[in-house]
Structures are given as structure tokens and as C-alpha cells.
Length: 405
Ligand code: HEC
Image 1 (cartoon, protein in one colour):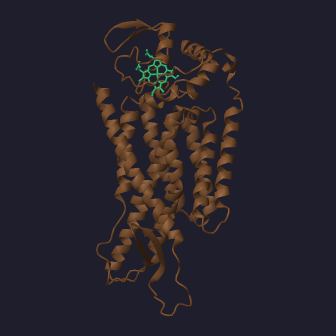
Image 2 (cartoon, rainbow, N blue to C red):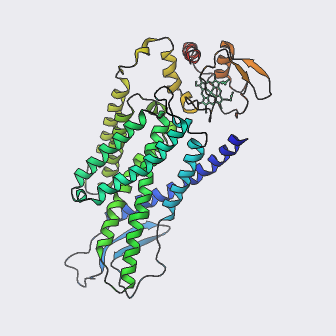
Image 3 (cartoon, rainbow, N blue to C red):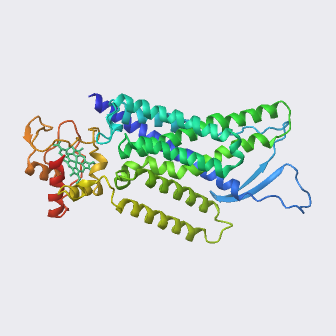
């Protein structure tokens, strides 16, 4: 019953999270696009307007939206003046609730990879939550320090420290949890940027205007730096949040370099998209970046990992299929949340939905893969797709793998 209630909350939180994230990221992309495409006033204009910073015309809804960016006259503050922050806060709050329901509520074991670590579920939760807070403090300290005046150095330091954190977590967490943890750290820092820097500076700025001081661009500048960080993090964070659907990547032995390539490539793609109007070959460069990233990741996945002495065992082919066919996305090691944990399943007794019991012999396992709806395990929805289409020898390999668990 408890897990059923948690399941429904996961549905609600996940949907709210996705919806709010779409609204937030959509705003971030559109606002940055508008800023980048503002046309600055011409120097030789006849009646120059000293308050005008730029303008932009956009075709939409049967008319032209004429947008002006201008300095605000403290005596004529526009009403209503729209603020944008709740999309971000809603994304963060629903994200934290989802993290609790999906990963923490079962005691934290859903985070762990039992083959890599012996830490307890409670420790895993503490590491995960602590990691989110510590990452924010580290990132914020770097970008408050003098180093921020040397952005290349600050970016490099932030990136190296992030990879160090990923490396640390990869020693304990399973692949899916590792991607989500990294996404949660970055996403939380993005929301904290909105809360502690962007909105706070806007509040200071509005207060100074209301006190009758002239429009000071200083506040906007500070907020804009954090806003650009958020803008460039959108693609990598989205990718990480969808990681449950990319089992080929989340199960990779070389999690750190793979994630590093993903992050760099997606930031580069965003940058190339932003350069669209002044860099002629932007589209070709995006395809090039994409191809190069896929190539490097393919090499990282293909190159043998030293510790994998089991690479030649009969079940190894099945283990690969288990990931490649998407089984691993539902059947996660050490977790029975989405689907039964298959550890030790061979020749064990299974309880079915109707209360009857059955022995998990070879015939049962094969039927479970080919026609999962024929016998549904108690406590689960009949959610597993049929793998009727798999060739016989793939089925045999999968069977060997299941028997080896
Ligand atoms: C969409 C999620 C999903 C995917 C993908 C998936 N499964 Fe399942 N699987 C389930 C669920 C849920 C159950 C339990 C309900 C049932 O018995 O149908 C289950 C049940 C099983 C069982 C029986 C477990 C038991 O405790 O008796 C086996 C064996 C199994 N899956 C193997 C596989 C293999 C092998 C693959 C890949 C070829 C796979 N599954 C892909 C969700 C999934």
C-alpha cells in the first residue's frame, strides 16, 4: 500500500516537475534569445532616445510584438511589471519531492550499486542531500571570489570540481542515480542562482529605483552572469534528468568521462545555437559537435575496462543485452521500485498477482521475457513490454544472465 501511494505521488511530482521545468527553461531560452538579438540604437539616429538600450520585432499571433529594452525612469516605473521566478522555484520544490519519493523514501537503497559499495541506504541519502548543498556552496564561492573576473579559469575550476564530485558518487551510486544526482546538484544550483542572485539583485535594483536613484546597470550585470550560467546548464541538466531512458549511457563503466563529454558537447551546442546570426556555419558546427561527441562516447563505451575479467563469461552477452534492450531501466540493481529486483531469481519461488506461487525455472523466465502479461508478479502493474521479437540466441543469453544473478 505504502509503495502504491508513493507511486502515485511520484506521478504527480514528476509531471509537475516536467511542466514547471519546461516553463522555466522555455523562459530562459527565450529571454536569452531576445537579449542576444536586440538591435542596439544607431549612433547617428536623428532623435536619439537616451533611455533606449535596444529593440526587437517578433512576428506572433497575427501581429508584430515590438519589444524595447530601456532604462527605467524612477518616476515612471511601469505597472504591471512582470517578474519571473515561480517557474524556477516550482521546478526545484517538485524536484526535491520527487527525489524523496523516488529515491529516498525506500531507505535510500535505490541510489546504491551494491556491487560497488557497502555504505547503507541512510548514508546514501545523506551523501546525496549533502552533495546538493556542498556543490552549491562550492560553485557559489568560486563565482563570488575574484576568480570570476577570469571566467575561463572559473569555468575550468567549476568543471573539474564537478567531475570530482561525479567521480566520488560513481563509487557508490548506480548509473541512473549518478546521473540524477549530478542533475539535481546542477539544477539546485540553477534555482539557487535565481533565488540568491537574480531575484535578490532585481529586488535591490527596484528598491534603489523606488528610492529615486537613477537606473544602475550594476545590479543587472551581476544577475546576468548567473542567468547565463543557468542558460548554458539547461541542456546538460535536461539530459541528466532523462537519464533513466538512456540505460546504455548510465550503465557505462566510464561514467565520469562519458558525462564530461555530454556536458561539454551540450554546452557547445547551446553556444553554437546562440551564434546563429553571426556565425555562418553554426548548423554544420552543431552537427560536427554532435558527431564528435557520439564518436568519443562510442570509443569510451567500446574500450575494454580492465576490471572486467568477466567479459568472456557466457552470461556477459546477456548482461549487455539486458542494458541494450532497456531491461536495466526498469530492473535496477538493488531496487525493486519500478520492477522486481532480479537478483537470485533463478529457481526461487515467485508470488503472482492472483496469490498463486510458481517456481522461477527456465521456462518461467523465458515466458516472463516473451509474454510478461501471462504471469504478473504480485505488487506490480503488468507494465513490462513483450520481447517476443528477440531472436532465440539473444533469449538464451538473457536467460544465462538472469541465472547468473
Ligand atoms: C517498462 C519496464 C520493464 C522493462 C523494460 C522490462 N521489464 Fe521485466 N518486469 C517489469 C515489471 C513491472 C515486472 C513485474 C510484473 C510482471 O511480472 O509482468 C517485470 C517482470 C520481469 C520478470 C519476472 C520477475 C519475477 O520476479 O518473477 C523477469 C524475469 C523480467 N521482468 C525480465 C526482464 C528482461 C530480461 C527484460 C529485458 C529484455 C525486461 N524484464 C524488461 C518491468 C519491465
